[in-house]
Image 1 (cartoon, rainbow, N blue to C red):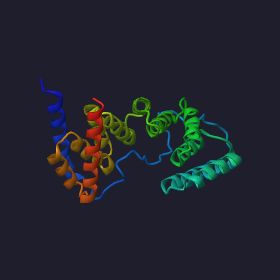
Image 2: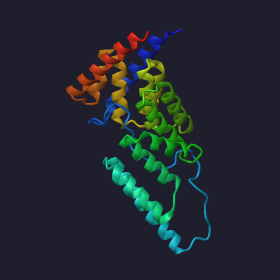
Image 3: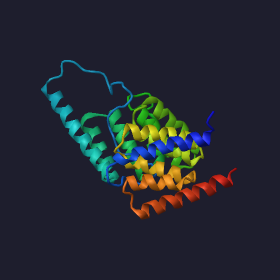
Image 4: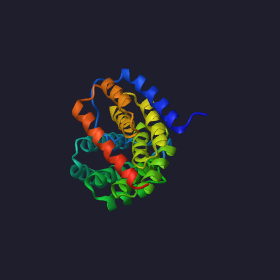
Length: 250
């Protein structure tokens, strides 16, 4: 039977070989910084379907969709205070929705208003945004240094939405930070196959290779991504720091 170390090396080798089809650009930072996505991912409707709506209902729905896209754009551009303000304005016009609660919680998380963000995410756990809520709670726990709680929430997010690469990436990163390299590889490898264009996940695989001491394969993967040398050096520094920290806890 193949040992865990050899199996890890073998799987990583396959991933490196598959890296030649990557887009020639570098993605976002390696640390989990999820891209906003406001659509429900649990396979359930966000709310009941209302029949017999008049034209004004249709106009309101279209207006809400436009404003949701606007708020999403603000999150992507780092305009978190403005996003919260627009969420509040939308509530005044059309009442509260699960989508608005998620958008506000995500904005407040990014602002560092963790207690308010946590309350918002917790209110969504039994909704169509439950997977997103678990993910948000996982990132809050990670920011607070509660690694086991973070991994628990992130695992729940993956269980509720198995095909969201973002969740796989962040869980893989969390597992790697705890020295669970095979578990990290499983999540990151799945994330790569779900979203081959996401170079952030490939960057985390480079970090995993460097952390496990396989600099040669890490270099091969970095080359296939056209990763700039300063970024590779930064990842090597991260890997060295992680190895020292893990060694100190054993």
